[in-house]
Length: 410
Image (cartoon, rainbow, N blue to C red; front, side, top):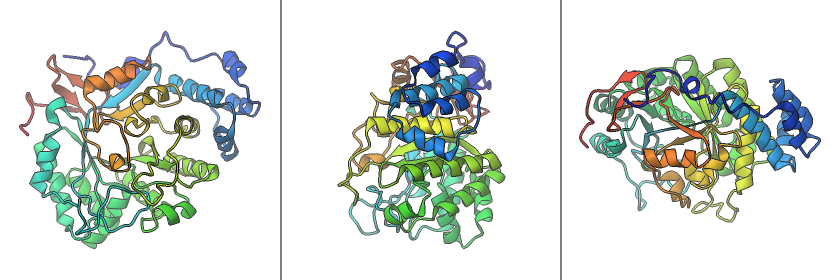
């Protein structure tokens, strides 16, 4: 079986002891901006950064110095490891009543391109990604105006029965709020029923920027930032971990980005419920904001670096290769990111807004991508434990579950 050590945390198996973090003296000598020095001293002493420190990270002309600080913290935590997982995106419907200016993917009922999958159709779609031995299903969709409450619970139960051992990461905080409204149920009751039906964790989408000024422009009908955090808190304290995102590159300010980070950090102090942070670059094509420029590579890397340094209580900062590109994502593994997310199979939401990356990569392509950065690839499961495969590449153990021989038919 490859690799050995089933169930052991990937960090402990893959830490490269020959690759020691950069020495403090050498790190400080590299900084050309004096404003970064007190931040560097805090990082070296493992002290928490302030709001003002966060603004410096976004505004310092010493872009490489910011990256060096983030890389040191990343290597202190994860050595030379670069994580990824083999996941399958499943979008059961793109029909949505909310008009979000940021979205080029969703459709209103009756508009060309709209769709809703029946449950068995959605399960067949999920099975189409099994060829590479998926270990996680990532399920998100639109806020469908007429699907009944039991569609969501039935879909989860059917997916759970069809794919035992596969981690089901389903429904963002925005969707949980909507599903509860559809069912005329208390939110806690909804979360517990979805959890019982098979919801193992939740994606981090819909967080966008928590600041009301920004949300009133880019996602005016979506739940507000306080509600998003409230729902995430309720998930966490009831045993459902989540990811968390930030959509950057639209109309937000540096202050609003830093505020977003610190609100995440505050909730993580309280619950320890966030599995990881994923920065999402705004893609303006096909949206009412098509006049805005796409994010630059330096902004992409600066956001990742700032996240690694400000989010001191989150273990994992991810670089979403779908959005920043296969050639650029490996660079992020030296600017604070330790995870390139997953193989995806097959992404549609960002591509609707003009992304030109592949819609999905194979496991071997992901490993080549990580090796191209000089990092050591580790296929992880939802718990950041190493996935075990047999000599033919079939999953033997993942998500603390022993997989039966063979894979389900599509």
